[in-house]
Structure formats: structure tokens, C-alpha cells
Picture 1 (tube, rainbow, N blue to C red):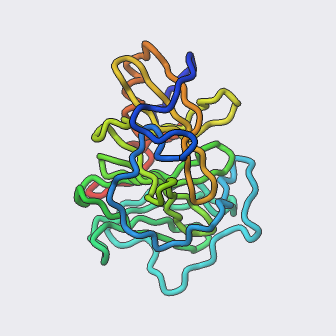
Picture 2: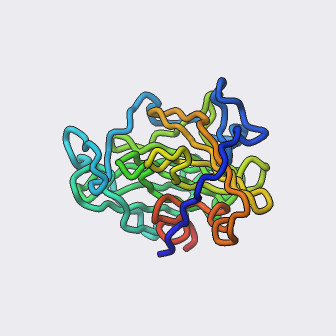
Length: 262
């Protein structure tokens, strides 16, 4: 597993040009709120409570998602991989993605928990179903769990809360979506300590020449707004490569996620 490089902060900067200002809480650096999205089918009032057991966060009151009666778990033929403990019962869970077209026209990704629970969502995209992938990550290292769902052009953000995926919305009510270099707002996603407080932040990344701008994505339950930004100048080739990728801490989408057609 390749360990992502942390980007040292050398200069605080304003939010990336083209993004909304802090006052209106628009899409963050590396994100665009103009992507076409499906209407969320899960609640948008949940609070993220599940925690990775190794992170020292607070687990749900009843650890372990309840067994899902009548559900088949990981679909036959779906790609699956061991992932973080998303329900606080101290056991790793399984993330999966199915390359079969779902009823809504997208593909299904989900999590099968060690306790027998199963929850999933339909990931739709105008770019087609090939090459879709999902990474489950702990943003802060303290149990702030999210799913990063990519179609190769953009990454949609979901909170993982109370045994469900919650589409995170920006101030315009669109699902929060990071750009991967196709609209000019960003090139990648990472979890780095942008503001220097000792805790990792979810960040939109933008490579411009040899500079990398990181902008904090502040999460508040099912909503996200822009936060502080910082720029690394004369970044190394390895840092630039990572800033064009989707990573979080030691995890990478390429090595630790699941993908259709894999």
C-alpha cells in the first residue's frame, strides 16, 4: 500500500478561484456543485455517529448494524474488500460495488457489516457505469466516516451514519462533488492537516503548475462548506501525483477501494 504524502503548509491562501466564498458556503476547492445528481433517497438530517474502532471516537449507542432480514448481502459478482469498522462493534466490515445496472440506471455500492447488517445506495453518473469506484474513509482519524464515490471525472461525497449512506449537500442543495480535473475546480481529494491543528481535514486539492492548493471541506452532518485553504509551492512530482488522486490518510482509492469491472 502506498502511503500518501502529507503536504506541508507554507502559505495560507483564499479559496480557489471559481468557488463560492466562505460567506455563502458554496462548493469547495476541488468540487463543483453543478454536476447532475439523483435525488437523495436517504435522510438528510442524520448526524454521523458511527466510528472506526481504532480511532478512539464514540461508537453508536447500540454497536453493530442490525442484521438485514430479507437482503442478500454482497451481490454475486460484485467486487468487495475489507474496510473500516463502520458500526462500532470492533470488527472490520466489507465494502462492495456491483457492476450490474441498478433500477435507477446507476450501479449499487454498499457495506456488509460483520454483524450481518447491509446498507447500500445507487450511484448514478452521466459518464456511464464503467470505471466507478468507492473508498470508505475516516476523514479525521477520529471516526468521521465517509464514502468517496468516483466515476473517474468527479467524486461524490456521502456521510456514513446510523447504518446508511447520507448524500452530503452543499449550500445550493446539490450533492457535494469534487472535481478530478475536468471542470478546472480541482484535481483530487485528500485527508491532510490543512489548518495545522493536528487533525486531518477532508480537502479538495488543485494542482496548478508545481503548486498544490488544499481547501478544507467542513462537514456538519449532511452538509459541507468551504473552509481554510493553504498552498504548497514547488511541490515534488510525487506530491503532485497524489494531488491528482483520491486518498485519505494511508488509504487510496486505487489500492483500498472497490471498482466496477475490476
